[in-house]
Length: 120
Image 1: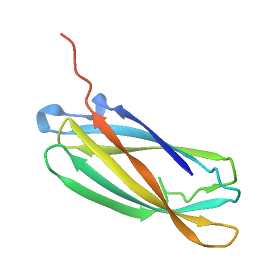
Image 2 (image 1 turned 90 degrees about the horizontal axis):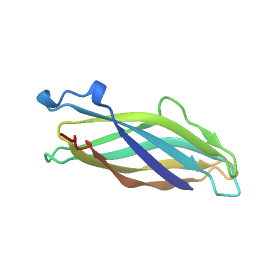
Image 3 (image 1 turned 180 degrees about the vertical axis):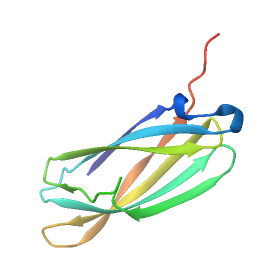
Image 4 (image 1 turned 90 degrees about the vertical axis):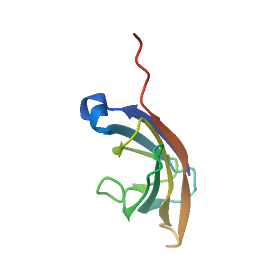
């Protein structure tokens, strides 16, 4: 399994004067196994540079539990709000091997969310 992440600052949905900073992220999940997998759950750890820490856990991603055949990839977009201009997220997915019904964890690598600096 390979997980890659792209992040995007959402200035239209942010309000810096109220310490509200919105980020979108695109996750790509690639199944490099010789068997089909189903994404059952997600578990996120979210760290804000102001010291806030949150955990988010639940079924699937964006309301679905996708099945990935061997060499298939799945992408989805989601978002995260921070109270400061910088933060990071990481976590894991709980996957099921559809051949033998065993479950396994897949690490989601840490990624940064940073408000781009504005030029004068």
